[in-house]
Length: 279
Image (cartoon, rainbow, N blue to C red; front, side, top):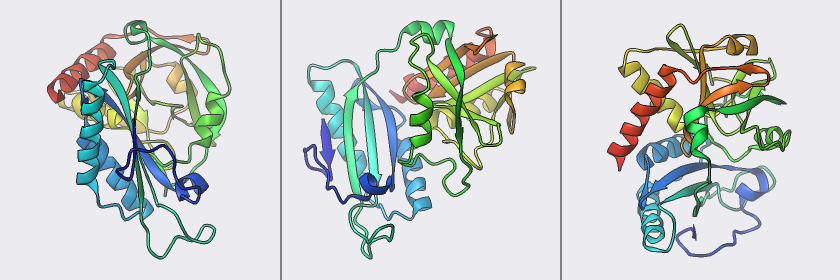
């Protein structure tokens, strides 16, 4: 199911700047029982990204309506209970080379996709991750937002085909640990929760922000800092997260092993409660 500027079609203009230059943003949202989970938080981040990139997108209410219609159609059809909603906003078409058009008409694309068939064991017993060789560049202008330029993640994900490895962890060019190829990363040490500072690179995920808020509400110390693999390998617990998988404990990174600990399990339970309340 695809809507492009409100029309049910599958083709976009070849001159669209999202295709030409990656000039846009996207959100990936879980759908449960015909409802986009945490849709308002995703739309807030999308709007913030548009402001950062100076894309004059002001049709949030229309996006909300179209997302609701797509999700309801999916739920009424012969489909599974869960799905993935992807929303893309580009700067539209026009402009000579990199120069923006004088009049910007953003393109909006909404599409629904089958939910990935991840084994429940990943959530319960943890996953295996590896350190990627591909490094993240530094750019404070683009750091944090979910823009369409994802070549670093594409190259990092191409580094392995072993099905025994579920995620790759990415460092920046200064060898500081930042995130996974598709996830944000947390670790726990001495009952404090640590995650990377995303001032120069990385994506500030919706799930990341919610985990930090609920953890603080439950008295857990939250520390955003710059750290290396040595510090990560000495952690008591490690987990990764995003809006589709939720929270996966990490049981192994390269040759270093971790336990699926009580704090990770507690955060999983709190997030489940929030998602159930959202429904």
